[in-house]
Image 1 (tube, helix red, strand yellow):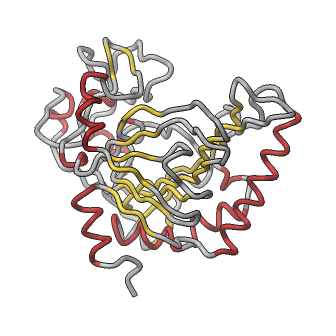
Image 2 (cartoon, rainbow, N blue to C red):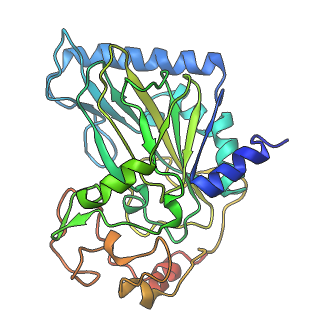
Length: 318
């Protein structure tokens, strides 16, 4: 039985996103919230980022204004590694079924995180595309954003530019530095086209990897927390190390693994930074003006893998 209506599936294809209500059961939502509440309470005892992921970075990121009296936990990296509730929802809930319908039927897990916006959080996220952070050999990637709270016009709602996934990849580099957002001169027009993503807790927003999106500050007294899971088609292989390495990366979620990578264009076009195909463009691998493999990548940008597609395919041939 399909988990999406024809209208919902068509919206993902034409707009680059779809919002599906009741993506988890009330019991699953309550369990997710309970674990999160416990982590927020635990954070009161820390004054700096803490915990450890498999690459050594902190598991729990705190806002600069965090205090015991007013805890400001801003991100939890790969909660599925430390919570059976979050692992089960990522792998076994309706969310995974929806992702499989859109980019499957064979899909893998890539990473997950919780992004938090506490009440009155000034944090805003500039317009960007997620593909720059998770480049793969093809675009069959689904970013699933599960609403852990109601998302309203006041609490830091997500904004998506419909149809932007058809415009190709936009650079997140500026003057040779990775800044993580689209240039200001393009934002005015994007803002005119953007649509608010509003919904009840338990809804999920599925984003295409080239869908341009961002979010505003939380001006309310209510939290706005998202559990985000990234799924890829089985034949989409990464072109760079994961921004959030974890022990579940590459695990099959639905269907069967693939022995080959599906690639939409030849390697020489990638290395020349060709605009002939959406997605696989040089700027997500190296800064403009540099050749693949050059040193000097800013620490905050995507890791420069310097891989030719042909050699990558050879490394992963079974």
